[in-house]
Length: 285
Image 1 (tube, helix red, strand yellow):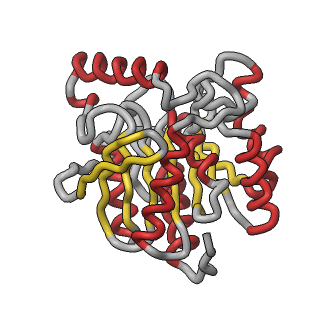
Image 2 (tube, rainbow, N blue to C red):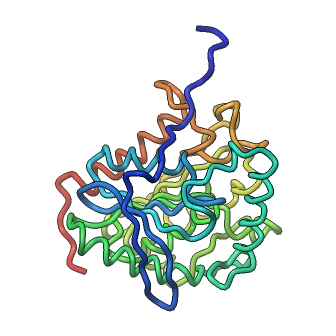
């Protein structure tokens, strides 16, 4: 019906998720998990594991995979969008703390964040625990490039970079780059060329946090191994969290057939289905 609200991204809670602490590589964080089948690491965007991120995780579970959500920042399950000015202030506080944390590299080019080593250990543990041919990974916004760095590991068969925003695009060099060590990026490029690995990237056109130069850089580095999905800014949900189109799989998603954002979500889920649940040759890591 004309004028009716557009269906947004699914929302969920932590009530059915198991919680544990995972320690490795000098770091310790909570990890939330749900489901059965091959592991998919859902590395959340700022400000943390929100109801929208959990809604995406539920899609992964329904697909037949185990959703693994490391809590790297923020308050798990908290929804700043429903908390007015107080929520905005808390979200800004999370952003500030993350930017100065030793676990993350926010401004340097060609450098993976230190937390990537912890995530790699978590992926290895979950692959051994959940079984299957390998692991899927989706990074969002601040963590988008983490999925690229993790794809240097042979266990990672389905990497997704949703609006990868690091390093912050402060200069031309920052825009034409990503937060990934050269050695790791070279390994990913080799896997793309020799193993058929495909790295899926998602962004809205005009997103100031994810400039077009970043996707051109990835295309030059990975060739046909980088599959760019670039959506018009006008295809965002009108009630998105930010003034500009940004969060493809969460707050800017219009979850209706025929919508570009829904097609992007389906493309992500199809990648997980094909690489983790289909007839994929098992790797020996």
